[in-house]
Amino acid sequence: MKISIFGLGYVGAVTAGCLAEQGHQIIGVDVHEQKVAELNRGEAPVLEPGLDALIWQAHGKGLLRATLDAAEAVAQSDVSLVCVGTPSDHNGALDLSSVQQVTSQIAAALRARPKPHALVYRSTMLPGSTERLVAQFLTDLQADGQLTVVYYPEFLREGSALADFRDPSLVVVGTADGQPVAPNLAPLFGPQAQVVNWRTAELLKYACNAFHATKVAFANEIGRLAKRLDVDAQLVMRLLCQDTRLNLSSYYLRPGNPFGGSCLPKDVAALSQLARESALRLPVLENLLPSNREHLASLLHLITQRASKEVVILGLCFKADTDDLRDSPMVEVAQYLLGRGYTVRIYDPQLNLNRVVGRNKRVIDERLPHLASLLHTDLGSALGQGGLVLAAQKCVAITELARYLTPQHTLLDINGWPELKRLAVRLAVRYEGFCW
Picture (cartoon, rainbow, N blue to C red):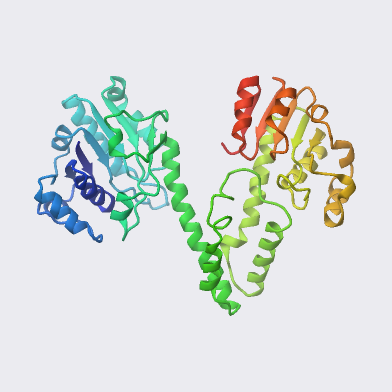
């Protein structure tokens, strides 16, 4: 494949070397004469272990050269990869000027010499950027079917970028509608590539980086607190990472309910208080509970926007297969709705009021003293003939729900239940996801 790569910085240079290694014919493009000259001498324009040898080898085989002329590069390639930088503006906003400039150059080159071409963005861009670039520069080229536009985020770590490219842990390709890329373009991304739409691919890159930043900040805060308490933070974190069922796993990384239960809220509060008593500011830890409250407020707002006067809660306890009401978000929801005059019906087969004791019982006595009159043991009577159904937990079989749901119901899926969405489509029931 003949590929032009715009931007010979870190991502562009590594991408150029690795694609040339695969046998592709690469033309690098940059506005800096020095980078172009270095690549044309077979030298890597950035420092990365192993890249010098890779560039030299590709140059020797005639698979890699560079130019200052964007039009020439586009004319002699089938695919253009945009790898230019997107630095922060003075106010923290993303500066897309380099991407816009390159896009304009590619568009002009294709108008001057019309031909089938693929434009692949690798630059890190906020969700919606690809759409805006297409609308601003590429609408006519897309309309005639000659141009394919793809967003292809990079997940390369400086210092191990060649290994990351050769054996990627994640490959995602964004197309306009999330449909597969054309067969002639697919080999560029490899067999592991998962195809989504532009915005999903764009946001994924930011979600990954924000998660990495969160992990670093979290570990550092635990480290500061541990040092103050004369505890070995390195040992604490090594042991934490040994748990791959909960800690280093996908278990909690699912958008949905605010966290609750008998452990997380009280333990986060206690740790934050300990930090304050130790004269330490730990912003990540201190903002976990405010973030959780903000998430609950968002849920309440969505519910009141969508609800008629009837609301059905499927799963009152803080998670499925438990009868624990302590700090359950759904208790907050029920209390909020009742205080505003909504009719609330609750179905939770795990909750037996005769067996609720201790703090669990105090939750009911203090916050939902009339719970017995709201709780239905029969799913049909709980659902009634209509209203907003809050699917907070998977506490009922889909086949049972199918017996009682009607088009007069609206389903709000709070925790992500794929079968529920399919059921809603089949029964013509309105469906909405909380965070999707």
